Structure formats: C-alpha cells, structure tokens
Image: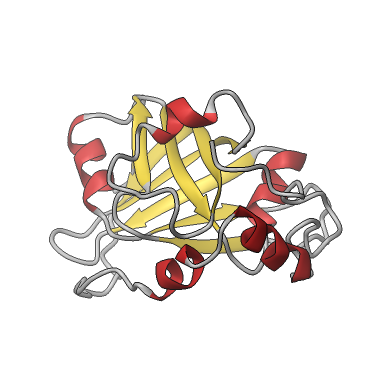
Length: 194
C-alpha cells in the first residue's frame, strides 16, 4: 500500500539513486495544453541535493516542453519504478525550476554531478525540484526488465558540437525556444558553458 514520506532519505533515497531511469511529468496551466511526459536516464545525471531537493541535468533534445512548463508554473512530478528487485514506485511531486547556464548557481549545482562531463550531451540547464509530496506505491504490475548500459548515441552526437553549434542546432528546432503550446522555452541564444 502507498505511503507518504516527509523527506527523501534512508531507504527511499537509496532506491531513487539506484534506478537507471526516471520519468518527469509537467503540464501548462491551460486546460487544453499539452501534457508532457519524458524519460530521463544517463547514470550520474540525477542527484539528491538534500532531504527535500533533487536535481537533474537537462540535456539537448528536440523540444523543451519541461523547461517551458516549469517557467510558466513550476509544477512537476518525478517517478521512479523498480524494474529489478522488490516492486516499488516512488513519486516526488513538487515545484521545479530550470537553472540555465548563465545563472550564478549553475556552476555550484553542476558540482553535484561529478561523473558527468558537461562538454558532452549538450547540457542546457539543471532542473532543480523542491519536493512538496513524496509517496511510494507497490509497483506490483511493473514488469521485470534488466539494465544493460547507457546508450552513447546522444553523447556522441552532441559531443561534436561546441556552444555555437549547439545553439545553431536549437535554432533549427521548432519547439526549443517555444513549446508546442507557444510558451517560452529555452532562452536563445544559448549562453556559453561556464
């Protein structure tokens, strides 16, 4: 049965940090806006900052829906599923904020991800989430799946792009500077990596 937690610590923190993939869900305020659900992976790109704060690295992609929704209203849910071991699902509901590369906090936050080379993957921002509700549920219907390794296609592609090349890539994409629903997305031109 589900349980609510006051903080992210102990067994709950260990479970979250052991997962190879998690999912983010955001939505605009508009009732007819597009709900976004995204998988996030890459070992080392997620960190528990403290008992009520988590963060993950926002890498280059074909859109910026999560960033746009967070800029508009801050609402976000993160979810982890146990695909190996005992069944479990953990959700962190909270308020998120994209911390962009020109933000004075960016460099300090980046220190929470020592295993990630910021010159690869087209790092755009760090998403910081303040937990408002932390819950777990049984996960009995989640299938067993095994983790083999991270894919290297993303990092290989974006490692070949310097800041100017990354900005040019974003300028060509329809839903980077604005979301599918027309909300402000990633601020362009992209600031240089600190």
